[in-house]
Length: 76
Image (cartoon, rainbow, N blue to C red):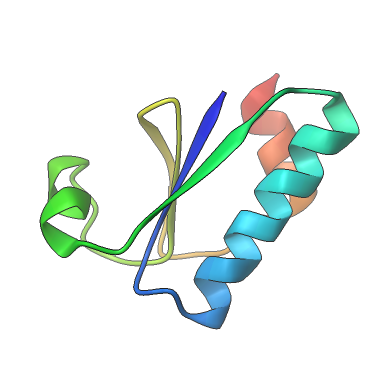
């Protein structure tokens, strides 16, 4: 499973990555986190606000920091 965290590398972006890692660890899911800071790459996903989270290329959250529980819900 690949988590794509999109944003300029701000504190909120880092929190999204931490929450995604925690959610995957709690569910026992193997994962990789890819940070995307290039706005042209974000546009390919249709992302206009950050932070954003995509899971395996499917955008799940834009403009907010999803909680660990919310991300776990996205994975099930």
